[in-house]
Structure formats: structure tokens, C-alpha cells
Length: 356
Image 1: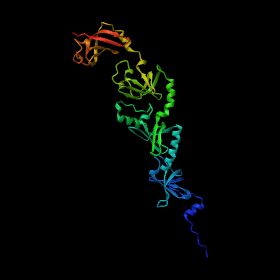
Image 2: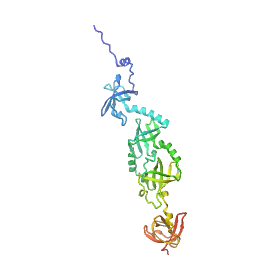
Image 3: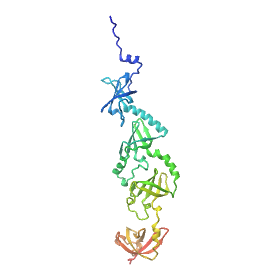
Image 4: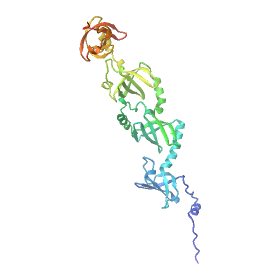
């Protein structure tokens, strides 16, 4: 009579094959055997088949049959006998280990933003989502816009989505899942070296990164510079946008070096027309000019393209209670007499020719 076959349990089979049992929370390896729209199946060898819902695949990760992957065990045995796995969780644990090491070493890493909001850029590094705040962007990428236009800021940030940016980890907290990055920190060592090479009086070239009411921001080899509106041209500048557009190459002279910014002048690379034009005038001359500004203390008068003079309220009539706005109108032309020329102070005083 044939001997009855002995029944072997799964645990006994695994033990006989020296195969470790699957434990909840463990990270195990397997080979991708099927990639579908909503699920991925993983061949775990003698340990069975793993099931990965699409939502448990790390953002942006592309898998194909034959890929060897690590996954975290979420459920040791589902109703259909498969093992429920998460690639995202496994990647996150490994990712946080990598991030901690990079933070401790102060290493520079590269990220590609996948989205933007008005506060900054959203990134993912080693399966961990992080944030690169606007305030931590370099001079090259900082969205300098006039009037803090929120829509233009967002537009400028969206232009950085998909582009590689070198950053350092500013803050990382595994418990709260917080990862904050900084482009400024990634370039500061190189900036210190470049700052050391610059001095007041140097002529530099850069790219205009922002045009605002008070001037033009310029990226000079990673260093932020500002050309104040008063340093754009020798003539009166009403709007910097009339002279420079974002993306223009700007040549300027360094007139001051602050901690992390250059003060620049475009006009100081040009001949001062005031000096040549003032030579045409002398004390006592009668001149014709255009009223450019009216103030309680007098009116400013353009007597040549580069020369603006002042007729003080005391030169408009008896006493100091005369109202210049009742005497002058903006852009009208009047005749005046030159009272004084102060070349060092770049000032010309006028008397109103019609003064009684």
C-alpha cells in the first residue's frame, strides 16, 4: 500500500528553503513582472508576488518589466494571496537617509522643480518632496518685478519648472516630512571668491533680471547688483523701463560694494553732459526753460537737455507765501534770469523774469 504524502505547511516550506518570512514594515527586493495603468506586480521569487498600487509609486518614477526594485511591506498577505507593497514608502526611507547625509556634509545637490506657486518652487529629491522658497533663489533666478505683481512673479517662477537648479539643504525633518532647500547657500562659497575679485571703480557686465520703479536689478556673474534710477542716465529718468528691459545686457561701474550686493552706475560710464552744457551759461544770462516740477518751495526748470535749475519761491514775488502753482503750469515755457551757478554742487539758481 502506497505511503500517504505528508502535508507541508507554507511556513515549513519557507523554513526548508531557508527563506525569510515576510514581515510587516520590512523592505524587500523584487523584479517588476507587470506594469499596468493602476498597478504594478513584483516577482518576489519563492516569497510570492507583490502588488503595488500606482499611487504607491514615487512621483515621476518610470518603471518597466525586468527592473529590480525595493519596496516596503504594507500587508503581508492580501485576500488574493499577494503581498501589498509600497515603492514610495521604501524610497522615502532611503531618501531621508540620503538627505540626512547630504545635510550633515553640506553637499550641493541638483533638483528640477515640478511645480511653482507664488511662494517658491516645489521639488522632489530621492522620493521626498521639498520646497525652494523665493527668498532662497539666487540673483539669477529671483523674480524681480515692479510693484510686486503676483501674476508676473508666478510666471517667472513657472519658467524655472523642469530646469536643473543647484541647491543646498537648509532644513530637513523626517518626522514632519519637511524639506527646505536654498540656491543661495549653494552658490555662496563661489560668490565670496567673486566678491573678493571686485572693487569699487571696476566696470562689469551683467544681465537685467528686474526693472522696477526705483531702478534696475542686474545679475553680475551670480552677484546681484542694483542700478538706482538716479544712476541710469545723466538726464532725468522718469521710468527705468524706458532705458532697460529684462534680459538686456547691462554695462555699469561699481560705485559701492555691500555685504551681498553691488551698487552700480550706468551713467558714470558716459560723459557728463551737464559739465559741457553748463559752460554755455553765465551769471546774469536770460534763459528760456520748461517747467518740469512745481513744489511749495519753488519750481524746477529745464534750461537745456542736461541742465535743470531752480527758481525759489522767494524769487516769485513779495514774501514767502507765494504759491508757485498759481504762477506756473507744468510743461509751459517761461523766461528766467540766472542768479548763480554752483558747479561743485551742480546747482543753478534762477529769478523769474516776470517777477514784479
